[in-house]
Image 1 (cartoon, rainbow over the protein chains, first blue to last red):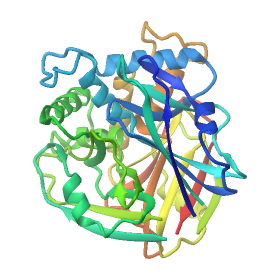
Image 2: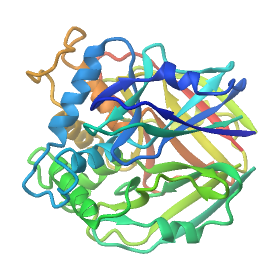
Image 3: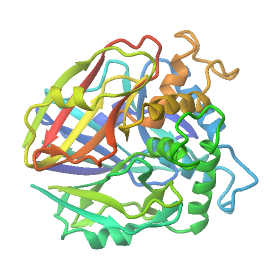
Length: 136
Length: 136
Length: 136
């Protein structure tokens, strides 16, 4: 069986944000066994799974990504949409536009330290649209 | 239901290439609701989703990835297959060998700015094989 | 149809490890056509697909990732869990916590040079739990 829903997560500032609870509240009741696929319909934001406990991890992720793909590199050609735009596209590909999570016993089968992150790579990215597809 | 097809995308020069239309033409009619999984059967090329409008984005993605994983680093041991080979393997893991896209109303439910990229990380990569699996 | 199993892969030292055979032996008989989703329930290890032939590739992948995300950067705030912890989280997001592989003719439809890697980003990561979900 396949079930699909589309929803919006509200605008956040540039950075890595834990959105596990917001995602859960946007989903219908989960099947006993299955997969949840989450897809973000944007090219300057991404989804990932990472540590859900210490907010320092989210801050350091932001620093690390800013060092990996810096703003205003002299070789950038795509500069008209702002200093944060081209780095955002590269970070989106490095992170990925979707995640897939197993569903077991009607729950997301995440590890004890795992949470879902919205990676917002733009300063004013606005609301972000997500498509959730549940396979069972 | 599950449907699967394997096809070849023609050889491209090293770089990021928008192949959304070529992919669509290689697929059977899409179901009303589902998922499309695309898998590239190679370790020096990859698939990603990124901006479909300005070709400068594709050029800058290529530059950024070349700066992230440079050729001829003194610590490389795997050098017999050419200067572009080991960086290609690392870039393939940074990008990923598959993408999964929601299908809604018989169409790929991509964001308005999203397209499918073939990331060719070798100078002479040749044709690339892709397996498409459609779940519905 | 959907089938799911959870298993442990034994502890490995920090690095990239080919685990294709260990994964295969942990799976039930595969369907004729389908998808295998593998999910690692940790935030400092990851799964990827890469070259299955030359062990030098695995050694160079480790070097490249260590250069991409270095230990003891002065801007790290999350330092209490050891020098290898924060880099491990970033590497996990760069690589990804799951892979999805097509199943064709009752076998994993990998390219001739493709194998499954466990990417262990910690020095003492211990056993790692994986959830395998098979769709058909």
